[in-house]
Structure formats: structure tokens, C-alpha cells
Length: 250
Image (cartoon, rainbow, N blue to C red; front, top):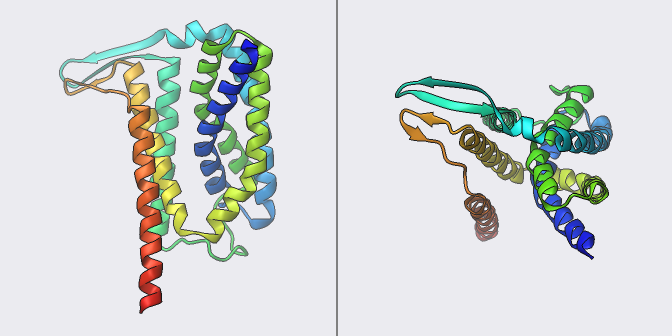
């Protein structure tokens, strides 16, 4: 019975972490032509599941290596840290997510709305699929480490990854369609991704014992993160409802 409980916990964990992943997949696939979007989503998710299983197999063998510092520096009074493979992956992934979210928000403010699906867009299907797979590895790194800590059954870990992949395949189209029909929520999704990027950056800095100008970098608490996301969603829902009432009364 222990393996059933472990499987349930792992699937629930993958589902929670998969929300951020689905947002990124929906936004990334929206940058390719309409005819290629479903293929990009499906190939990206399937490729990400395969890569996650490979990552799991590698982590079981290399977990001690990835946790051990391999590079350190100390600029007295300015910056210092000891970087491990885990901290570098978290920081690089966080920096990429932060850059992506800021770039897309800037495009929106500049008027790049992609309202006409017949127009040329900036992403090729291959580059979008590659970005989805690589970003999925960053998202899944902590979940794989947690899976290794929760159970020593490789079959349970693999099954949880396959189930989470099936859930993502089932929901990817719905998330994309929702964002397409409610384009204002794309802004909400981008700011959630921005928060995820900041969380990964702070987590990587914490793992590296990074200090900036004498101050230690602390990881953004998961509870604080989910509270901030909840507040963002509530603000967006209340504002949308209030705007509709104003439009009806005018």
C-alpha cells in the first residue's frame, strides 16, 4: 500500500508543478503558426516526458555530484557563493523564465498582439519544441529530486511522470484555447511565470549560499509564492468583473 500512497503524492506534486508548465507551453506555442500549435504542444510534452524519465535515471546515479559545489568565488563585500549543478540549473532556468516573461510583456506594450493568426510569427516549431522541452527539465528538476526522496521505487516514479504527461496532454489545448479567447489572462499568466522565474533565481542563489553586498540570498518561500499567485488571480477576476459591470452601466 505504501507505493500507492507514494504514487498519489507524486502525481499530485506533478499536477501542481504542471500548472506553471502548461502556462509556459501555451504562451510558447502561441508564437508559432496556428496550424503548427497543436503539434508543437504534443511533441513538446511527449519529448519533455521522455527527457524527464532520462533525467530521473541520471539523477539517481548523479544526485551526489549535482548537489556538491564545483565552483566558488569570493569578492569581499560584493558577491560570493559556492555553486553546485542544482543551483546553476535553477538560476539559469529562473533567468530564462524571467527574461521570457519580461520580453513578452514588452511586446504587448509595444503593440505586438498577434491577433491575426495568418501573420508571420517569431518562433519556428522546432525552436518552440526545444524551448518547451528544456524549460520542462528546469520545472521538473525539483519534482524529480522530491520523487527520489519520497520513494526508492523506480517504477512508481516513472508511472507518476507518465500520468502527469497524460494530464498535460489532455489539458494543453484547453489552456491554450482559454488564453486565446481571454487574451487579458495572458498578462496574468506572464506575471505568474515572472514569479516562477524569481522563485527559481532565489532558490538557486540560496542553494549556492550566494551573498550580494553582504546580504544573503534567501529562497522565496513556496507558501509566499502561492499566496502571491492567488492574490494576482483574485485581483484579475475582481477587476474583470468590475469592468464588465462598468461597461453594462455605461
